[in-house]
Length: 179
Length: 179
DNA sequence: GAAATAAGTCAGCCTTGTTGACATAAACTA
DNA sequence: TAGTTTATGTCAACAAGGCTGACTTATTTC
Image (cartoon, rainbow over all chains, first blue to last red; front, side, top):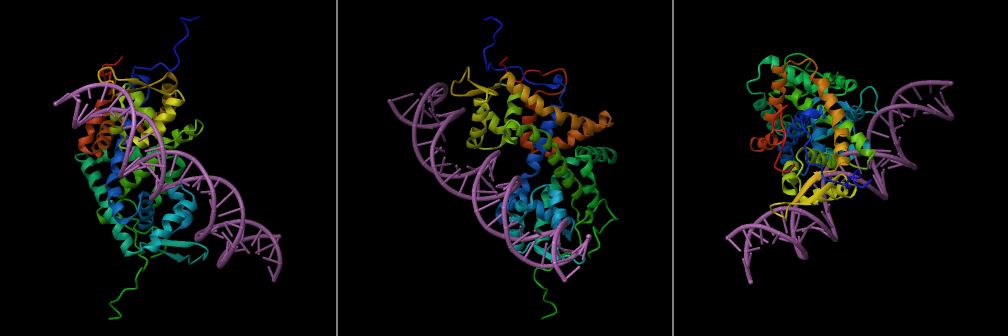
C-alpha cells in the first residue's frame, strides 16, 4: 500500500524525445522560425507607434487593395471590434483609406495610400531578405517542397484564401475588378 | 501648380505583387501556417484554463527537464515577470515542480510532473499529426530542405538553442546530467 | 564581509484579443 | 412601400500576455 503509492508531483527527469512518436524538432523549428521572422518588422513598427496587428492589416490591404472589411476579417480571423481599433489608427494616420463599395454601398473598400504602401514595403523587406537567405542554395524542387509543406499546414478549407492573393511571377496581377 | 499636386491620401489600387521584389507568398504562407499550427493546442488549452504561454513553458520544460528559469527565459525571449505569472499557475496546478539546483542552490530546476508531461503530449499530438500530414509524400531530401529552411530562418546566434534540445532519432537522449 | 547573481514579487501599463449590445445606412423581399 | 436582413461602426467591459521599474531574499563568489 505504501510502496505502490507514488509521491505526488514527483519530477519527471527523462526528456520527451523523438522516440515518443512526436515531431518535436519541426514543432520547435516552427516556433523559433516564426519568433524571429516577426522580430524585424516588430522593431520597425515600434518607431511608428504601431504593433503587429497594424502590420497584418496593412499587409493584406496592400496585397489585395479594395478588399472589404468582411474579407479582411476572414483573412485575419479576428473580430470586427479588434480590427476597428487598429484600422481606425491606420486611417487616421493616412496609411489606409476607405471607399464606399461601387456595387454595394454598404461595403467599405480598403486601399492603402502611397504612405501605407511604403510602410508595408519597409516592413516586408527584412522579412523577404531573411527568407531569401534561408532559401539559400535550395534548388527549385526543394523550394517547391518548402512551399507545399507550409501550404499543407493550413486548414484545408482556408487554403483557397491563399490562392486569391496575387501569386507567382507574371500572371494574375489584379486581385479584383477595381483598378 | 494645381496639376502636379496629388490629392492627399489617394487610394492606391494596384496590388503589391511578386514583381516588387518581395517574397510575398512565403511571407503569407508562414503567417497562415503558423496561425493554423497553433489553433489545435489553443482549443485544448481552453479546457484547462491555460493559454499559449502555458503551452510554451510546458513544452520546453518537458523537452529539457531540469532547465533553470534563466535558460527557459532564453528560449522564450520574455521577461521573468511575464514568465512568473504562467509558471506559478503551472506549479499550483501540479504540472511543473521546482527543485533547488544541486550545484548552485540559488537556481530552480524545472521539471514536469507526470500530469504536466501528459498535457504536453496531448498538446503536441495534433500538431505532430498536422506536420505529418503536411510532410505527406516529401522524400528525405525534401524533408531535409524544409528543416534546413526553417532553421535558417532563426537568428544565427540563436540556432545553438535548437541543437541543445534532444535531437534526431536514437542518440542524444539526455539533455543534461539530471536523470 | 561585501558584492554579484538567481529568482521571486509588487505595481502599473500597453497591445490585442474577446463578448454583448446597440446604431446606422443600404439592400433585399414580401 | 414596409419590414427585414446585411455590412459596418461603436461603446463598454474584460482577459491574456507582453512590458518596465523597483525591491527582497537566498546563495555564491570575490
